[in-house]
Length: 308
Image (tube, rainbow, N blue to C red; front, side):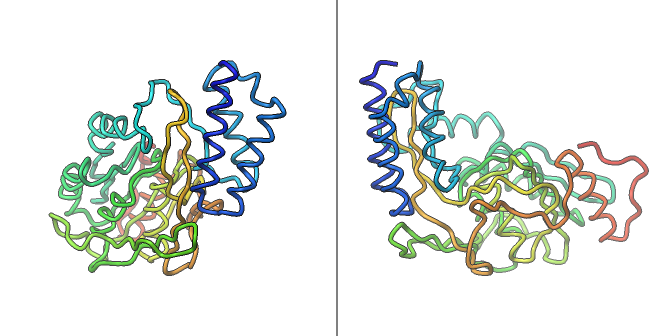
């Protein structure tokens, strides 16, 4: 990369972080860190945008480990518009992955399985697919939600899914801006097109160390509300909603701009991840959860374990 490109991208990143990051005190310190490192020549050796993104991201995450705060490389050129440069990619990805419905299956013992990956998409992109999946699973006696390969998504997508698991609208979290003001409440959907999943039916959420952001939110909301048991590994620990800005043709600054607070815990899963109720290697979580569901239903476990 030319030095002028590097300077422009780093200076814009520093400005955006300073103006928008959810923690204003850290925002100023991070902006100073980037500009000081730029002046010291830390980024001068970046041969391409990917390398620059990795260097800047390491610095952005050096103070508090916020994994949503980064200078993200995109192989395809980003559109010229400023905010949310990956919107078009999300639309295409939703279409290519059936709205995130990776797998719907009835397992032994009338236990349902719904795998959601790679993202929990907004309802306009995935509501029909999720509704179809829940319609198929309505008659099962227990449900496994597989989020092991879910790396994020939309809070509205989370709210839609939660609408199936609560008998009435339930407060999931309140979002606070960088000034500490409540700006939004997220509630489980008040209406879903097919019957809700009866509150007496057990629900298990499968997680891995790769489960992140929106996937973590779904696991956390169901767990902390007492509606689901989490099985698997501690998740990645990214709670803060973020927005994206174009800093270069191939670099997006992603900046967390708010923090969710759960009404039960008074906090969220930032940095800590969602802790499983039943710890298990991710590869074994499906088998472990299935056996737990069968035990809860008082159904004999199959001789052969379910393949992950």
